[in-house]
Image (cartoon, rainbow, N blue to C red):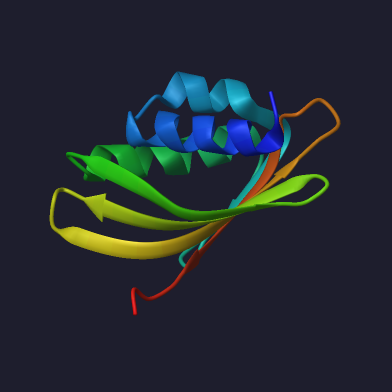
Length: 112
């Protein structure tokens, strides 16, 4: 599977709130950083993801653009939470030698 396909798979699992599926995609040393927090390790990243899932009844992710590098993929996303909270986000995922996600960085943007 290409890194871009893995990136899209991650987003689809996130949208479906598939915590086990996401956990299987993460390297043990994975990091997660966004505009509110920064954590290290798969368990910590999964704990934060679980909190996001529990706080939202629904998550819809529209992929606007995707760029792929050697070991990373960036995507511009439109995320709608609970049908009315609209976020524009850039996610950057890094991958290890085995194709597992080693870092997730999310940057809050604007829709204009």
